[in-house]
Length: 306
Ligand code: NAD
Ligand code: UD2
Image 1: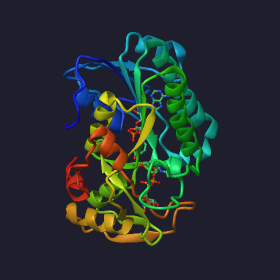
Image 2: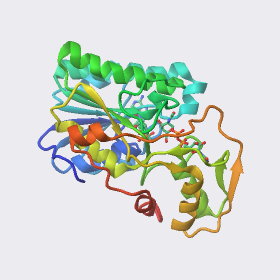
Image 3: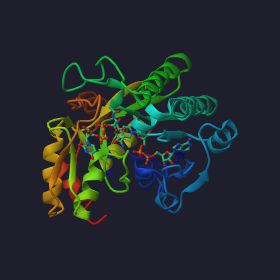
Image 4: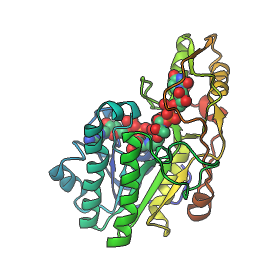
């Protein structure tokens, strides 16, 4: 995994049994003391690499967080309820986890003087006013999920400005890769791949002209490793590729890469869906040395046979 090296650290990865967190654990476990805190609500124990210490627990619980972060140098905070739809159905529960849970982590980091690298989201921008999206794009989250990510993202900067805590928020665009579970709520790439490999119709919402910036999990890990050692802290960085792909093109590419006979069918558009999304990654490139390295075609190939 490219990116500046993190070695000899005591590292906590919340959500480390999940899709992104477990790839982060894989990248760190050989050269660091890695502790994974996860309640296994959507993560899987088998995702956690051998050599990591696994603690089943909740980021909302102060005693658990205090125990797990005792003596920690670096915290990657990935744990969250990631479903936008679930945040709309259960805003209070998702606020508890995604906002209050993050505050627990920030308070623990303040006690331990540990760096926090936080999984923020392009969801904080809502419908872009211009593309590509820079970090100075006005925030306008459209879901409780986006609001909680936006608030937490701002808290990281404030904890740096008020207490001198080393914090970095990484605003992930649409992440895909091995171990992303396909469910009604998961990313479109995992859903299309599962449909194509099962020979089921590939379901495009609306006319499929809507676009997203799909970033492979290997590049998200790269960004996290660079954020862990950068001197440019107390700020946020977009993590994407700078390329946008239409959902219709994604469906056709998935069909081809999986050599599937699945037909592509169009459904009703998703209410409130964002029309276009594409990251400007200049700030991460210049300050972190981040360089997206996995093309969508190559990235999709890593999923075939998963
Ligand atoms: P995921 O669901 O695989 O990972 C989340 C992990 O957090 C799971 O292992 C889950 O069990 C754990 N978790 C949830 N609630 C918890 C709690 N209360 N206490 C402890 N652990 C808890 O999803 P992911 O895609 O790997 O997301 C990781 C992070 O990246 C999340 O913060 C998500 O909001 C953010 N993110 C993801 C994307 C994407 O496209 N996947 C985009 C933007 C931001
Ligand atoms: C949301 C979050 C993002 C991240 C992501 C999880 C926002 C603005 N963004 O992104 O932060 O958490 O979810 O991956 O909240 N689609 C289809 N057919 C399907 C499924 C989806 O056409 O079977 C379309 C969907 O209508 C949308 C696009 O694919 O236009 C992307 O949907 P998504 O759920 O993968 O991710 P998105 O962009 O809503």
